[in-house]
Length: 513
Image (cartoon, rainbow, N blue to C red; front, side, top):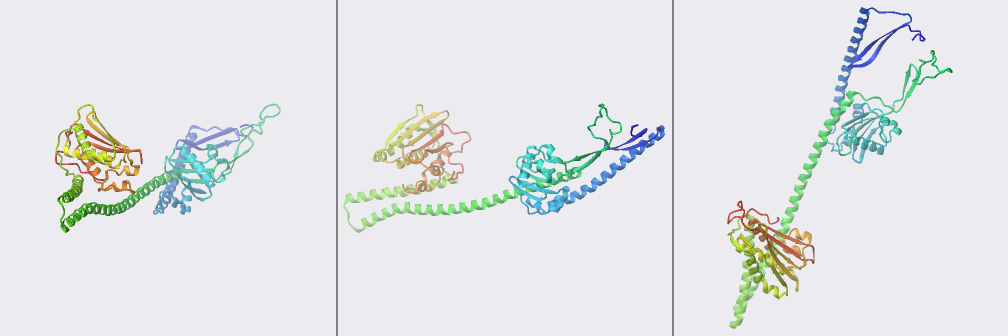
């Protein structure tokens, strides 16, 4: 100090919000002392000045916040028709850039990037966005990206500083503001590295020579009011993104429901047309046979043997007609949940044998090999014997119908826990995956194999499923595909559950389930 010609010095600290804001520095070229009263007065002056500076900064911040909030509201108001990408923000660049006093801004939505003003190239913006998302922060502010380690920062003159708000912690969805490099020249009272003289000492006249530092890579600092305003903008944008996503979901749902309803209506019309055609064919065939027999009998006198044959033919066709009508009535009862069931103890091993015996003649006509493996333990089930016979009849008849000549059918039964399980496996044509999902759907018999019709309305398995469900059981179908056979598995509880439906009722079923 003496070398500088300063023989007295004094400083008064200016402290704003607990931090040293500046100093009032006093010097004299002659020694000088201050009494206690003067020192108290200087200290008081410093405190008053600190309060004044703090008040002026607070007022300026409040005014700035009001101005920034107004800009925020204008930006949000302009997004009335924007989608969740918020691309519409860049359509008002003066508002977007003015909000953060930035030179450029960008909206990033996953792989898309919309820019305005002076910004880095799109690929660099996306790289910085990835880096910021990796920090897992809601807002990020930096006035020196290069020092913070951001990618490409050393080559980004237009983005020395960045302020970003993230709208997702998972996806790359951000709004970013960029400030250019602000080269600053700072004059210091002495270089931090001192030059020693030839004797290895500091020269007293040169220690405090003015030293100028050139600072690069920094932008103007982001003010707290700017960071706070962008935080408010983030909350508003999150609300918009959420609302747009909900609107899109609701619209997609409405469109999906309309489309689905249209498709279902078309399918229903097609199914109705198909059903009426099949029903007409199935009912007309036996009626035509009966009509032909009646005309033949009325047109001429026939011998007794011929009349017996014709009456047998009439009887068979009447039985076919009756079975079709019974199937339609049963399906209607299943769908309405009103299929009458009468429960009693049923020996399922014996019932399987009886049904197989009823079909044995048909199987012999096709040279089918039938193997029955009854349960090793008694298999008494509480069930409706007539309806269980109907279920087994449908399963075995289908196996015989779809198994080619010389094939095989295996029926295996077992008692497992509190269930009776019987499976019917054939070596027939098999069921393809798309048809397997519809195998229990009413009127679908023809669509399982569009190349060949086997007669009937395709109601048997739909009715069987309804009966099994009414017993609290399960009926499943499986196949490894065309030409590899199929297996139908019936699982029944040995005893009716306490909460099961009483006789004469059946839970409401859909014929497409």
